[in-house]
Picture 1 (cartoon, rainbow, N blue to C red):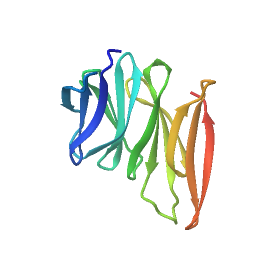
Picture 2: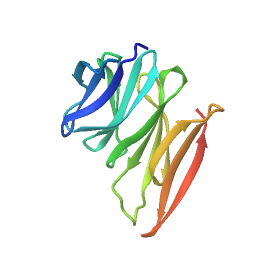
Picture 3: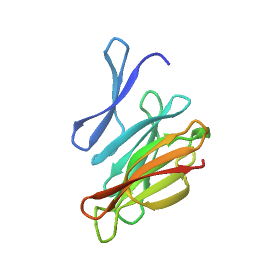
Length: 168
Protein backbone atom coordinates (compact mmCIF):
# COMPACT_ATOMS: atom_id res chain seq x y z
CA UNK A 1 0.00 0.00 0.00
CA UNK A 2 2.87 2.41 0.68
CA UNK A 3 4.71 1.62 -2.56
CA UNK A 4 7.44 -0.54 -1.02
CA UNK A 5 8.59 -3.59 -2.97
CA UNK A 6 9.35 -7.01 -1.46
CA UNK A 7 12.03 -9.17 -3.04
CA UNK A 8 13.44 -12.60 -2.27
CA UNK A 9 17.22 -12.59 -2.63
CA UNK A 10 19.71 -15.35 -1.92
CA UNK A 11 22.85 -13.66 -0.60
CA UNK A 12 24.31 -17.15 -0.20
CA UNK A 13 23.09 -20.35 -1.88
CA UNK A 14 20.13 -21.85 -0.02
CA UNK A 15 19.75 -18.87 2.34
CA UNK A 16 16.87 -16.71 1.09
CA UNK A 17 16.18 -13.30 2.60
CA UNK A 18 13.15 -11.05 2.28
CA UNK A 19 14.30 -7.57 1.22
CA UNK A 20 11.99 -4.55 1.50
CA UNK A 21 12.87 -1.64 -0.80
CA UNK A 22 11.13 1.76 -0.58
CA UNK A 23 9.97 3.94 -3.49
CA UNK A 24 13.34 5.74 -3.61
CA UNK A 25 15.17 2.43 -4.05
CA UNK A 26 16.58 2.33 -0.51
CA UNK A 27 16.74 -0.99 1.32
CA UNK A 28 14.46 -0.70 4.36
CA UNK A 29 14.83 -4.18 5.86
CA UNK A 30 16.57 -7.47 5.17
CA UNK A 31 15.33 -10.55 7.04
CA UNK A 32 16.25 -14.19 6.81
CA UNK A 33 12.97 -16.01 6.23
CA UNK A 34 13.88 -19.67 5.91
CA UNK A 35 16.18 -22.36 7.21
CA UNK A 36 19.51 -22.84 5.38
CA UNK A 37 19.12 -25.09 2.35
CA UNK A 38 15.76 -23.60 1.35
CA UNK A 39 15.03 -22.49 -2.21
CA UNK A 40 12.11 -20.11 -2.72
CA UNK A 41 10.27 -20.41 -6.04
CA UNK A 42 7.52 -17.82 -5.59
CA UNK A 43 6.35 -14.94 -3.39
CA UNK A 44 2.54 -14.48 -3.30
CA UNK A 45 0.41 -11.81 -1.59
CA UNK A 46 -2.25 -13.75 0.32
CA UNK A 47 -4.25 -11.62 2.76
CA UNK A 48 -4.22 -8.43 4.82
CA UNK A 49 -0.60 -7.47 4.09
CA UNK A 50 0.70 -11.01 4.48
CA UNK A 51 2.77 -12.98 2.01
CA UNK A 52 3.41 -16.62 1.21
CA UNK A 53 6.79 -17.91 0.10
CA UNK A 54 6.81 -21.38 -1.48
CA UNK A 55 9.65 -23.61 -2.59
CA UNK A 56 11.74 -26.54 -1.40
CA UNK A 57 13.52 -27.33 1.85
CA UNK A 58 15.67 -30.46 1.78
CA UNK A 59 13.41 -32.99 0.00
CA UNK A 60 10.09 -31.42 1.03
CA UNK A 61 7.83 -28.74 -0.38
CA UNK A 62 7.82 -25.74 1.98
CA UNK A 63 5.43 -22.83 2.52
CA UNK A 64 6.28 -19.87 4.77
CA UNK A 65 3.80 -17.14 5.69
CA UNK A 66 5.23 -13.76 6.69
CA UNK A 67 3.82 -10.34 7.52
CA UNK A 68 4.70 -7.17 5.59
CA UNK A 69 7.78 -6.64 7.80
CA UNK A 70 9.09 -10.14 7.04
CA UNK A 71 8.24 -11.64 10.42
CA UNK A 72 7.45 -15.33 10.13
CA UNK A 73 3.87 -16.23 11.04
CA UNK A 74 4.26 -19.93 10.30
CA UNK A 75 6.26 -22.38 8.19
CA UNK A 76 4.98 -25.75 6.94
CA UNK A 77 6.75 -28.62 5.22
CA UNK A 78 4.78 -31.00 3.00
CA UNK A 79 6.12 -34.49 2.37
CA UNK A 80 4.73 -36.98 -0.12
CA UNK A 81 7.51 -39.50 0.48
CA UNK A 82 9.70 -38.41 -2.43
CA UNK A 83 11.55 -35.25 -3.34
CA UNK A 84 8.96 -32.47 -3.66
CA UNK A 85 9.19 -28.75 -4.23
CA UNK A 86 6.58 -26.07 -4.74
CA UNK A 87 6.89 -24.36 -8.11
CA UNK A 88 3.91 -22.04 -7.75
CA UNK A 89 0.97 -20.94 -5.65
CA UNK A 90 -2.05 -18.67 -5.75
CA UNK A 91 -4.04 -17.09 -2.91
CA UNK A 92 -7.52 -18.40 -2.09
CA UNK A 93 -10.39 -16.44 -0.60
CA UNK A 94 -10.06 -16.38 3.18
CA UNK A 95 -6.25 -16.43 3.27
CA UNK A 96 -5.53 -19.99 2.20
CA UNK A 97 -3.57 -21.02 -0.86
CA UNK A 98 -3.50 -23.47 -3.74
CA UNK A 99 0.05 -24.72 -4.24
CA UNK A 100 1.56 -26.78 -7.03
CA UNK A 101 4.66 -28.91 -6.57
CA UNK A 102 6.74 -31.26 -8.66
CA UNK A 103 7.08 -34.75 -7.16
CA UNK A 104 10.19 -36.89 -7.51
CA UNK A 105 13.07 -36.61 -9.87
CA UNK A 106 12.58 -36.97 -13.59
CA UNK A 107 12.22 -40.71 -14.18
CA UNK A 108 10.91 -41.84 -17.59
CA UNK A 109 9.83 -45.21 -16.13
CA UNK A 110 7.83 -43.69 -13.27
CA UNK A 111 6.77 -40.51 -15.01
CA UNK A 112 6.65 -36.99 -13.67
CA UNK A 113 3.90 -35.92 -11.31
CA UNK A 114 2.36 -32.64 -10.21
CA UNK A 115 1.05 -32.34 -6.66
CA UNK A 116 -1.76 -29.81 -6.16
CA UNK A 117 -2.44 -28.88 -2.52
CA UNK A 118 -5.28 -26.78 -1.13
CA UNK A 119 -4.28 -25.34 2.22
CA UNK A 120 -6.11 -23.25 4.80
CA UNK A 121 -5.09 -19.86 6.20
CA UNK A 122 -2.86 -21.53 8.83
CA UNK A 123 -1.10 -23.76 6.29
CA UNK A 124 -3.00 -26.93 7.12
CA UNK A 125 -3.47 -29.16 4.08
CA UNK A 126 -7.20 -29.43 3.33
CA UNK A 127 -6.99 -31.59 0.21
CA UNK A 128 -4.62 -32.65 -2.52
CA UNK A 129 -4.56 -34.10 -5.99
CA UNK A 130 -1.81 -35.79 -8.01
CA UNK A 131 -1.68 -35.48 -11.78
CA UNK A 132 0.77 -36.88 -14.33
CA UNK A 133 3.02 -34.07 -15.52
CA UNK A 134 5.51 -31.42 -14.43
CA UNK A 135 6.35 -27.71 -14.68
CA UNK A 136 2.99 -26.61 -13.32
CA UNK A 137 1.71 -23.07 -12.97
CA UNK A 138 -1.56 -22.00 -11.34
CA UNK A 139 -3.57 -18.79 -11.63
CA UNK A 140 -7.01 -17.53 -10.75
CA UNK A 141 -9.49 -17.26 -13.63
CA UNK A 142 -12.04 -14.44 -14.00
CA UNK A 143 -14.92 -16.74 -13.01
CA UNK A 144 -13.31 -17.54 -9.65
CA UNK A 145 -12.03 -20.98 -10.63
CA UNK A 146 -8.33 -21.76 -10.89
CA UNK A 147 -6.43 -22.69 -14.02
CA UNK A 148 -3.62 -25.23 -13.78
CA UNK A 149 -1.22 -25.48 -16.71
CA UNK A 150 1.40 -28.23 -16.89
CA UNK A 151 3.18 -30.44 -19.38
CA UNK A 152 3.34 -34.18 -19.65
CA UNK A 153 6.34 -35.73 -21.35
CA UNK A 154 5.62 -38.48 -23.85
CA UNK A 155 8.90 -40.16 -24.73
CA UNK A 156 12.23 -38.42 -25.24
CA UNK A 157 11.18 -35.54 -27.48
CA UNK A 158 7.41 -35.19 -27.24
CA UNK A 159 5.59 -32.99 -24.72
CA UNK A 160 1.88 -32.40 -24.29
CA UNK A 161 0.61 -29.26 -22.61
CA UNK A 162 -2.44 -29.59 -20.36
CA UNK A 163 -4.88 -26.99 -19.04
CA UNK A 164 -7.20 -28.01 -16.25
CA UNK A 165 -9.66 -25.92 -14.26
CA UNK A 166 -10.05 -26.48 -10.52
CA UNK A 167 -12.72 -25.30 -8.14
CA UNK A 168 -11.58 -23.60 -4.97
